[in-house]
Image (cartoon, rainbow, N blue to C red; front, top):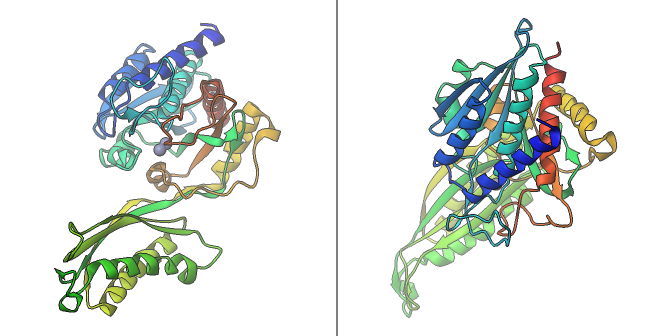
Length: 386
Ligand SMILES: [Zn+2]
Ligand SMILES: [Zn+2]
């Protein structure tokens, strides 16, 4: 197949997946479409790993080197509306590929098609199509399902499209690239009472408001100013009436950091501050704190290789420097915690693509597809030379 025809078929695949977005661990159709396309290559394909994950294995002309690498894409969509006016608009109510995982999936299928045809490498490439990146930890589900025992690899490689950077540009961070994220629910327990008789109760709403404010002192006054930390209360639930003070208010939110040591410290301080502020008002707290994704840390040697390969694809001048790491989280971190790895950003913007990830008008830019396919195949050539 000609290169243009191949890219055209990947654009069609991307748009087909965009029309049929599936949420975390429900990617049955997407996994079936991916598996069918991979099986047509005559390569080893495994389905149902980590519930809906797909793994394919491609051996090079030689495997004498003993080297094995994993390339990873994510397949899940978001629960959100699609407000775009395009022919490939989502056909599922309130489901949307608002993070471009449709594009990531299509690019890795495209790389598999090139690699299976040429097999111009010495070693083994393991292709991972993971479920549930958006909060539910599909990467961890695949690891817990024996991914590394069944398909051992020496390193993991990932990419994400990145709005806010022009198409044809790439960012590769050394070290910190995406943050850890943990979730909390702080249930503030007071004593409900009549609105006109506040002296009879313990005001859980007032205590909760002070906790929300006091939590901001943790990143501002307890963390080193050069270390990253974000604490956000995103939900407040409590009360039903204008004149009845409720017994309980629940505060829920997220905590983010790049360093594990900061992450540990934030967990401790959130609990201390919530408890002691509540006590000052005569209230108590019940805290549920859930570790979610670890930070994504790019291995320095892997980052150098990724930068070098990306420069071959987009030109050295288009490797953007000085971009800060993101405080968003990524479950690629579970892979990068097991083996050295690198996760890179590919610019997604042009005149027709200006919306951020998770925006109802966001669309993956099909112009990134040839770049992603080239990156994957040249990365394999660099890591597994004949
Ligand atoms: Zn996302
Ligand atoms: Zn994403």
